[in-house]
Image 1 (cartoon, helix red, strand yellow):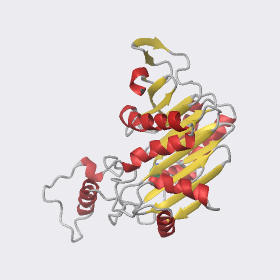
Image 2 (cartoon, rainbow, N blue to C red):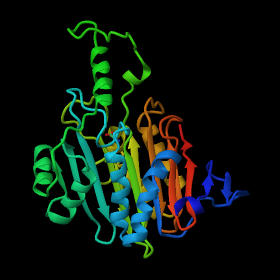
Image 3 (tube, rainbow, N blue to C red):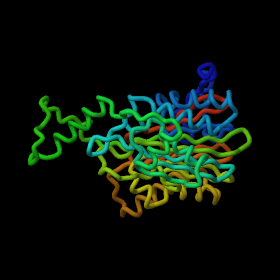
Image 4 (cartoon, protein in one colour):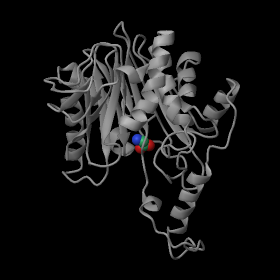
Length: 337
Ligand code: GLY
């Protein structure tokens, strides 16, 4: 059982490790031997995602299945407002999903963008990788492909997400015909436009690397907008000789800096994953001439089992987490700007 050997870890370099109830200081706190599975979320969601992912790894010995299982947990959970079912919709109230998958041993990829009415976008992306000669299917073509593979069309808009969207819409302008909400509740949540997303990266016992990114994208986006999450090299990249990286946050900035590709390339040059994540964020800061009013977060893992995690702003999901033979750990993202 995961809980029987759970270790908690807080903070970045030099931080406190709770190992079997004992506090220790760790020189290189985020290095564990593969197999390892890394998630872009902290303790609560990390455990939810990584527990089943690890069980799948132990049961099947397939790290591709394991990372898919982990990503599916977030995709199917109506409480997650930035991924899959329950995700916040586009400006017309339609949930539209983006996802991609990479398979290290073959360097093969699959992706779907602007996928509607289908719950497990990353599983469809995996089918694009495994069952077509293409890499990216979009919109109605992606939906029809999913249906051809037996996926059921469903309404992905939960009541909670619909009410959140309605509040956003009713608050948009005083000059349209939508009156303000009756409760006059101009809550912070109503104006927030999350780009939550989840990355799940895995390295198996043989050192092969796998990864998935999945999202409902920027809340209230213009219909047809595609973020970084289905773009290989942006929302996800891996190289079987180096490791893997994934991005969450403002996809436009990740796309224009090829963020995950850059992070993996920096690791290829010998950089620790932590430093590579920070350098990739500095590229965004430089392109924006030092001024950033959005968040981007990178996670990375290299073949030595070293994990990195950094973000531009100290809000949103401020941690990432990973699980290995030594248990579950959450680490705080280093804030770069
Ligand atoms: N990173 C998710 C998005 O921008 O759509």
